[in-house]
Amino acid sequence: MKPTIGFVGVGRMGANMARCLKGRGYTVAAVYDRNAQAAQAVATELGAKACDRPVSVAASADLIFTVVTDDEAQRSVFFDRSSGLLLGASGKTFVNCATISPAVHVEIEAAAEKAGASSLEACMASSIPQALKGTLYLMCGGREAVFERLKPVLSELSDNGKLLRYIGPAGTAGQVKALVNMVMNINTAGLAEGLGLGAALGLDLPTLMEVFSQTGAASRVVATDGEDMVNREHSCFFSAAHAAKDSGIALALGVEKGLKLPLAAATKAQYDRMVALGLGDIDKSGIAELTFPGRKGSG
Figure 1 (spheres, rainbow, N blue to C red):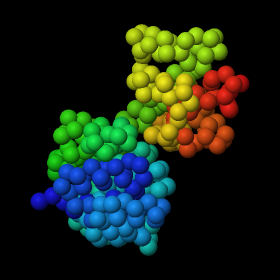
Figure 2: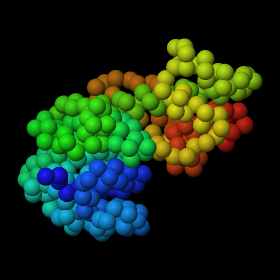
Figure 3: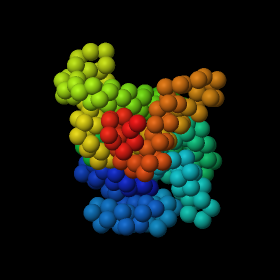
């Protein structure tokens, strides 16, 4: 039998994951979001219950996905003494999809098991369209037996399992995700500087991007972010604020290992500057606003 599903966090990613699973025949029984209006809208659409506390989602579902913003939010939805998921955890399984510090994944697994529940991290390396289509790249960490048990439902979200990877014990998938986003953010910042300098030199930017794509300057962000940088189209798929947060997670891992990561530090400083300029809610491609001549944060 398919498990009954609940979601804690129904923003851009969580809501589309819920829609995907509903379309694949799963019952999405309950949702919670700190934005109660968003939770009610998704609940109405999917025929689910809009809950006012995370623990109420656990009471209504067998398998609960958490898709929240950061360490503080993740700890809150689990450990709040009056409303946290652990209050209703016995017999439940939690799949935690947020990009958070790896140590928090380890902490949650231990607490869930103590409460008679199971926990798995399923870190996502994709964006909103993939969440809806069920083609997320999922990196999983935790007990391998839990991963194997959840493969059927996780496969629905990852192109029939083609994009599903077991990384290792709790925390390891979070480490890999931090490195993925660190490198992605560095590439994005580098592309913004290259195109910004190209614009200042008066070069034809479509030609420059085509050359980048065929040479050692190639990276996926040339295709995903290049035109948006040129056209100043920064509709949010992955926010600058999240980029700053995720680069910070990677930098903290470096500190733990005694490593200096100067490119990651410089990139985080750029995204922190976007936040300071009031640009934290736009897409990470908006880092071009700091590098193109004549734009808000340039110079």
